[in-house]
Amino acid sequence: QTPAVVHFCACAPALYRLWEGFECQFQTCHCLALFFGSKSRFLSEFISVSFMNNQKQQKPTLTGQRFKTRKRDEKERFDPSQFQESIVQGLNQTGTDLEAVAKFLDASGAKLDYRRYAETLFDILVAGGMLAPGGTLSDDLTRTDYCLFTASEDLETMQAYAQVFNKLIRRYKYLEKGFEEEIKKLLLFLKGFTESERNKLAMLTGILLANGNISASILNSLFNENLVKEGVSAAFAVKLFKSWINEKDINSVAGSLRKVGMDNRLMIVGYVREEMRKTSISEQTMIGIVWTSVMSSVEWNKKEELVTEQAIKHLKLYSPLLKSFTSQGLSELTLLLKIQEYCYDNIHFMKAFQKIVVLLYKADVLSEEAILKWYTEAHMAKGKSVFLEQMKKFVEWLKNAEEESESEEEEAD
Image 1: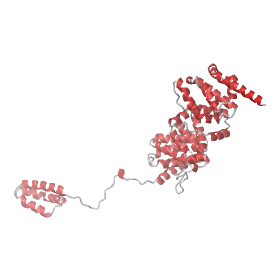
Image 2: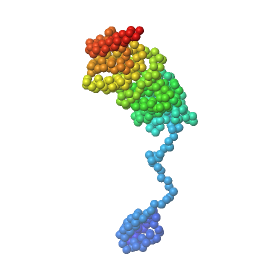
Image 3: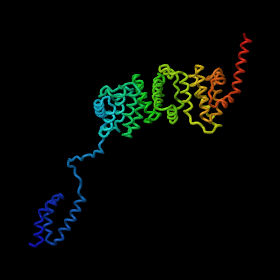
Image 4: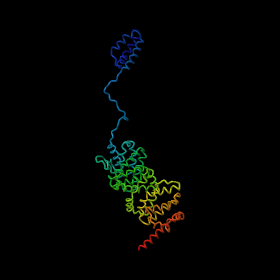
């Protein structure tokens, strides 16, 4: 036996197993032994060629094995009920301790899918459970008694809840859009809530608007036809703005409304009067607030020759609103003093004072008695000489008209 044959025989078991792995027949090994005697080099060439052919011709076979799908390729079934149970359980454990609630929500975001179940999360925090269309709670799901709607109806508690939402959205920034959509939805559901629930939501919304957590554009939901017709929108708006103004000044409120083009849409007179009655706000105080709000809702032209025309157009639009809160002589005088003060403090309006007063006189906002009283004795020191001079001819005309009217009455008698 040549050394090559000895070597082959020693390697035969391993070669056989190799060929068996390539799914070759026994005859192939037999041919290999027959041809091996010619040249030892033949073996290596034959193996090489056969291996390559085997690789090219190999076809996949079905063996019944199931391939595992990667987790990121799996689509998790949408199941808000399980999510709700997890949140409700945590809220029931934290109870009325809002600091603990905030910590629980912060930690749960790492384990629960807030992004997918944002609406469910906010429904639970506000109403205690998932809301059905119209604002009613779903009967067949777990709910909690620890939520906004079951909390105390006072400003301090609503401020604390606003902090819970603020912390949550700051921690999980992607919730910001979903939260704004939730508030829009809740406003459309107002009819489905009790008066107390609406009051709490109004206070919370006002605080959130003041803090910049949501845009004033959410107020568009209040113009829903059904809400407006039944007076729900107006009553809600009164509470909301009262809460908002408590946090920020009227200029800030007006600026936020102006940014979203809503500064000309919100005149809610009847319900404002009702709120005045409930809270004992005098008409004199209210006309001052209304005037400041109206004048703060516009970005005024810096050119003196143009700002007067701009002011006249603007006040024509709002004269019915101003008229609603000048039913008393003292209210008219208060408005005149506010106008005087505003024109003095804003130098571009110095020449506009007389035209504003005349416009409001023609619109029946100001009476001639109030104007004459202001002119003769009730004006303030700010810009006194300038404004009295502007009003001189108009006051003379008023006096003459008054005298003519008196003489006509005497002749008639």
